[in-house]
Length: 339
Ligand code: SAM
Ligand code: DTB
Ligand code: SF4
Image (cartoon, rainbow, N blue to C red; front, side):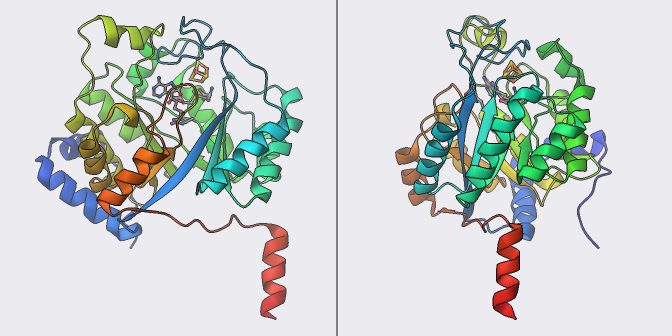
């Protein structure tokens, strides 16, 4: 019988968080080994294809018009420039190319360029991921038809904390888009941010929301808040006693995500730049098996390829070799060759 459960209760998840740290890590490492090789880590590269000027008021985000972060708004990047960046990422060993746009939702007039980008990146043999805000069922179907492999849409926190961090949309809007993505056949990438001032109970509610979806997200990014000056939450971290998330509590969250969603890729996402190597190593022990590589996330700095290469060397980790995403012509070709 499969050990993939979608009937987790909040009490069970809270009990996992409460385990002695050594026991929690042992259980997470065991769950990790049931579905993944513990020395393989997926490398993903991020590119902001449309930066800033977003009408939403997410309290953590440098790209919101409500923030005073100094991030300048740009138009959607030219298709050729996006493909150039993708080619560089592939050369640097990246397996997945994730493209983000600072939109509440894409407009229908943006869709032809987006479709062209998806097709172009996929033709290079990399997995494609997009995060463009809310999607209608029709837009999700268009992206599926273009061959998009993953759609990232984070639930970010517990349903209770969500409305404290964002007022311009509701958790249900997020869940509706996730359902539209799932229905279209695109793989789901959904996670959140730790260290926004939420409580342990909120972290329980956050994992519970993901782990009780009808089907777990294939990818679960766990971000540590990058405190950007000029954002409400970033300023709270800089200027008031709101404490930075405790490293051990962050690792606990990764471990609980791993235990409750054993088959998913759990991504140690934003916030690595200010994390010690020891904390990152604990995250890998706790079942994280994916990272963002490169010097930049969307607008914030990232750890960078040199320091990651050194870390992987020290820890004996290697890049996960991805299979090329399946394509109709490829499948036919392979079948013909086998005949
Ligand atoms: N606009 C789209 C949306 O919100 O769905 C896509 C881009 S948005 C920047 C993608 C995700 O980045 C957010 O859901 C959030 O989880 C993460 N993020 C944004 N700012 C962050 C920060 N300062 N620290 C950590 N994660 C952040
Ligand atoms: C996700 O969960 N983290 C990425 C990606 N999905 C799109 C974004 C992190 C953004 C960090 C802040 C910045 O670069 O502005
Ligand atoms: Fe806009 Fe996304 Fe930033 Fe929210 S997280 S302000 S929706 S870009």
